[in-house]
Image (cartoon, rainbow, N blue to C red):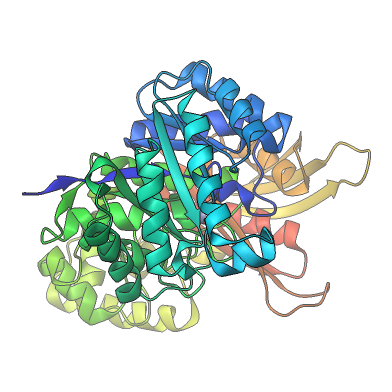
Length: 498
Ligand code: KIV
Ligand code: ZN
């Protein structure tokens, strides 16, 4: 019988340790709300003793979020635990996550200590935390490189001291899946009070094994998985929770189920990416822009005949409207006719042959074929030069101690219109000015700048993804001036809104 797998999210703690990803209290609350809606079981909100800002965010989250268990991290230090208990004062379901390093690296170099002393400190921190809360999770930091016999002694002792959950972190992402699974199995088989606690995996991704190691942990008896949305976290990151959740949903042979509301995954991923300013790589499993995009002719044909030919997950199950058949030079007739039908053209077989020839010619020159291009191909609509919205003029004013302002002139259907707007930076100001002119409710979902080489005079490639009335549109441009490239990419995306 399938058992419940507890999903422990540490986006706001381990995820937030990434340089440049720091969040303010309001942003943390917004992410906590999304995690609550997503249905995770535990939200680790931060490390309260680390800063007054972290402490305050935790307090504010506990006043709003009531369903999941709310957790705060500490070291095996009484002061940390006092502060965590204080921060958790308003939490309905509270947990203190305390622990200490157990590998020889930590014992010798970090603590200048020995195994027996560390064991005593592990027991003491759990007992101390138990004075404040019933639910105490213990972590054996660097358990991945801790010898199994000693780890088993520590785990048995902290469970006897009252730990309800024992976390076995592969802190440095060193383990191989079989090795990590064997470690969990060793604990299950050799710790005599193990049934009194839940064993948790907490895997880092330094060798790209985080998801595989967590799954191996599950197969060997772990019943809590810790990770973050989009896999963000220290160095190469943590286990990506969306991957675990969808692996469990997709692979019915795994012995567990989760209570995550999977259609909320994509929204949570976008929110974390935007607020933490961490773009998601396009080929990222489950949530990447290309995760459900099919571009080769053979695959497109297969998916159009039966989605399951090339898709193991229904995109709707993760909150993405449908799989996208992207038209490129490698697309076949079937994909072209599918797109044409979607925008209202049902062609005879000869007309389709003709359209396909024109399409291939255009696709050789142009990466991204839009609906407007298809209309041109079938003889209705405008050519790219006649695109409805074109950037005529852009001027930005920005710099230290000045409010970023942009003046934009667009040619919309032959009519010239001008607007000026302020923003948080020159790109934001340009986007705001464009928005004022196109009168569309457009939400920026993704904004990614890549430079081709490394000089300051490089060409910047800008990718933009926008949302309008639940549809997603992609825009691209390249220019040595990144602000101009950004404005053009934004307009490129907007032009695709039919
Ligand atoms: O990776 C790790 O060991 C941790 C612990 C503090 C739980 O994040
Ligand atoms: Zn960690």
